[in-house]
Image 1 (tube, rainbow over the protein chains, first blue to last red):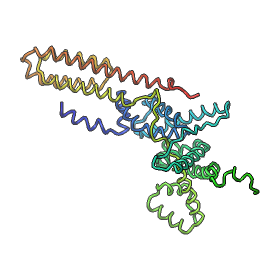
Image 2 (cartoon, rainbow over the protein chains, first blue to last red):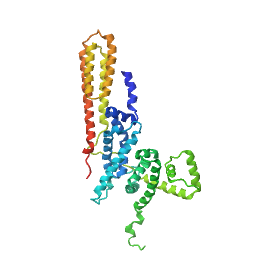
Image 3 (tube, helix red, strand yellow):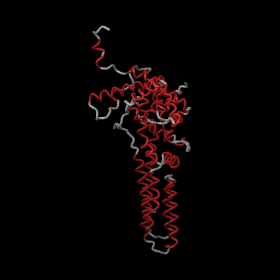
Image 4 (cartoon, each protein chain N blue to C red):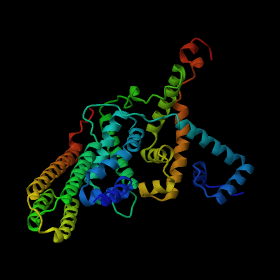
Length: 214
Length: 182
């Protein structure tokens, strides 16, 4: 029996994503699903956060993603990549959430973005540098939120999650060339948006300029 | 002069071009100021994107799921199962009665709906059966304690699986129970 355990352990502890989801499909293996969730929770949360621009909601959404993946575990095709399946489920939930927010926004003109919720950069920065960094991050977040969703998805997957254009094409089920042209279009739009949302530098602040003749 | 497509430029920007097309594109960039300017603009935009770091650490909030727990429960059940096998192997008992005991465990495992446990138990029963052919005549008073052990294993395993199953049910229900922010 000891021999069997020795043989079993390495296989138990370093399985691929695909082996794990297979075990979930075949045996409803809770351990395998827990392992998958642990491996992917942070990337999925990051994706949700950047897609909807709200870290708190993103956390709930990430949990929903794994719940949905579990419910739909049988839809995963064994010849595919688990991560492709996972990103797709996550993006669809993000789209649903954005749709819900859009509907709510029709009744309320409140800004959807929760400013306090923005991630703080590392502690190694001085307070003023940190503030500046935070402002830059906020500008990017606002600009991303103004980007059409299908452009935003490409930017988030390529730039932030480092998926290859080919993988993004698989996730979105569109041709690779389309992914690349969306990316270039997204970058063009972002350049404009970033300029628009970048706060004016302190020395050219409106208050100080008000009395000055232009 | 043929300019590279925007798609090619994107592949170059994200370092996805093979070495040959990459060198060709770099040669073009050396000669073509408009393409260089385009690329510089895109690069500057991507650098700005880096300022947006997603929340690094999870915030602790009530109602969070703990993913490691089902894994622990399953692992614990497996360990108990294996320990039971090892114990069982160290005792020698009458063939028929042990078979009855393993069948009992098997029945419980089946009831818990775990094909894996069942497979392992069958294998175990076969292994023990082989050994017992040579040990059949020996003492049978070990039997009672072994049976008890096996039953404990079965009960613990079943409890572990049930716990895990409950977590799955809770998990499956989650989308409806997750509070939506107004």
